[in-house]
Amino acid sequence: MRSANRLVAQVLEALEDAVTPGVTTAELDTLAERLVRDGGAVPAFKGYRGFPATLCTSVNSEVVHGIPSRKRMLVDGDIVSIDIGVKLDGFFGDSAVTVAVGQVPERTQALLRVTRESLEQGISQVKVGGRLSDISHAVQHWVEAHGFSVVREFVGHGIGEQLHEEPPIPNFGSPGRGPKLAAGMVLAIEPMVAMGRPEVRVLGDGWTAMTRDGSLAAHFEHTVAVGEDGPVILTARAETSEAASVAR
Ligand code: MG
Ligand code: MG
Image (tube, rainbow, N blue to C red; front, side, top):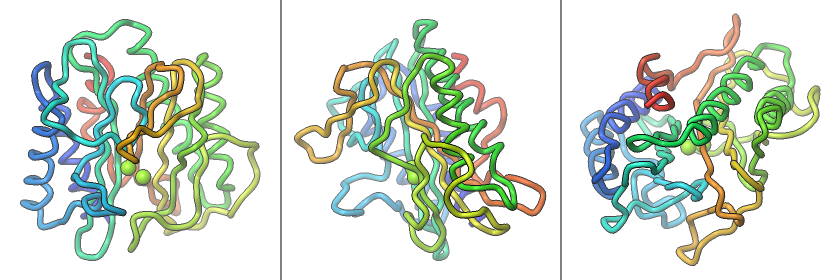
């Protein structure tokens, strides 16, 4: 799990650097697939229920599951959520980040920052003896305290020898419910946050989910192990990289 998820983190670091005005989401996908295969892994999303690419690239009001395209050139002021999964030596890694393209308004920076912080809040509840919905509650509380809304239709998940395992991990709910967390469990925690209303609709391509009201959305995800002494973020990137995705 460590190896697969370290590779995911390294690929995301490279992609963060590659996001710049003028790049297409297809170019990001090509780079990602090369780095995944150079790392001895295979893309986990490509072919998953027919998904055609290594990355999900979701721009602006797209929440998740956007399909990379040569026609989708990123421009100054966009935000792009990049989600990647890999399989390495039988184990899966999964992580996502939303990156600002060039300069974005302060309110957009706040959306990215709060979503990333909500993930950190969720991760802070990962401890032996804790309950799964403590994570959900911490995410929701942080997001709503800052005036944004939690997308309900998509949730995090257990991960291991399958990309999506039990249990589902909603980003909302009351604390103190669900399975008790035990050492060795591995969870993909992934808040999806809208600036406006949380409802989403899926486009005609069958994949791309966007906010119904057209408001911007962000998505951050880490694969996290329940360690004896607290959370172990298996997809942790260099701190400078994590901060840069929001700051620039
Ligand atoms: Mg993911
Ligand atoms: Mg996931």
